[in-house]
Image 1 (cartoon, rainbow, N blue to C red):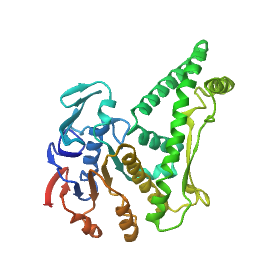
Image 2: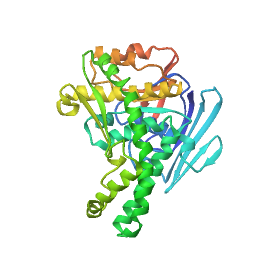
Image 3: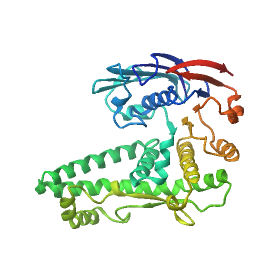
Image 4: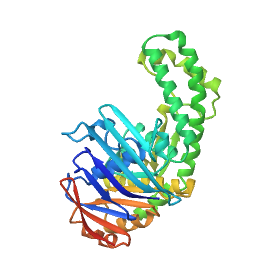
Length: 365
C-alpha cells in the first residue's frame, strides 16, 4: 500500500500543484511555517475526511480561496491502482473514492490506514480523559467497522437524550435510557478487551526505547461497571436522572470512561518529566501502529511530524528501530537535523526541500 501522487489546490499555504510521493520514505525538509505539516494534513484528510489539526475543516481553505480540492492516487494492499478525493466548497464536503461519490465517511477510512505522530500527541498523556478516549476510539475504529458503527450509534442516542433533557421533554427520556443502555454494553466490553491487548505492546515498547525498567501501563476505568446488564444500566440512568437534568447533560456512560496511564509512582502525568511524557506519546503511536499490524496483517502509512527532536541520540536510534514496518512513511525535518543522515540515505527515499508552500526534489534513492 503506497500513495503515489498527491494533487491539491486551495489548501493552506500549498502552491496548487501535483507531487510525486512514490517512495517508501518521503522526507520533507524546511523551516517552520513553510508547508511541511500542511502536506501531512492534506494526506490525513484524504485518509479520513477530517483534519488532525482542527475540528473545523474550513480552516484549511487557503486565505484567498473559497474551496480546497485534494486528490490522491495510491496502490492498495493488492497493488491495485486506486484514487480518493476530498473537496470542500463552502460548507459542503464531497468525498469520491475510485470515481464514485460516497455518502458515508466509513467508505473512505478503511482505504489507507494512516497514523499521524504530532506534537499534540503529548495531550494524550497529560491532557483530559477525552484525549485518551479519542485515541482508543481511533485505534479500534481503524480495524473494526463494527466498533465504528457501535460508537456512532451510541453518540447519536446520547445526543438525542441530551436534547430531550435540555428541552425538558422528559416524557421521552425512558425510551432513550433503554436505547443508551443497550448501545453502551458493546463499547464497554470492546474497550476492556482492547486495553488488555494494548498492554501486551505498549509497556515493553516504552521500556525498550527509554532504556529504563518501568512499570508504565494503562488502566481502563469505565463509568459504568462492565458487568452491568442493560437493565442495571437503565436503573443507573434513572438514579442519576435528577443530576442529569440539573447539569443539562448525561453525566455517566462510555463518553465518561477513563483510560489512566500509570507507573510505579502512580499517575504518570503527575510525576513524569516533559521528556518522559513526550516519549510516552511517541510510543503510544508506535504501539497503535503495531496493534493495527497484529489485527489486520497490514502495515499502515505513517505521518511523522517533527516529533523526534526532543529525544537524545540513543533514544532516537532505539525509537526508530522500534518503529517497526510501515508501508510508507512521511517525515518532516528542519534543514539542520544532521543526526538523521542515516535515515536520509535509506533506499527508496525521496527528499523534498519545502519553501513557501512549494516542493523541490533534492534527491531520490
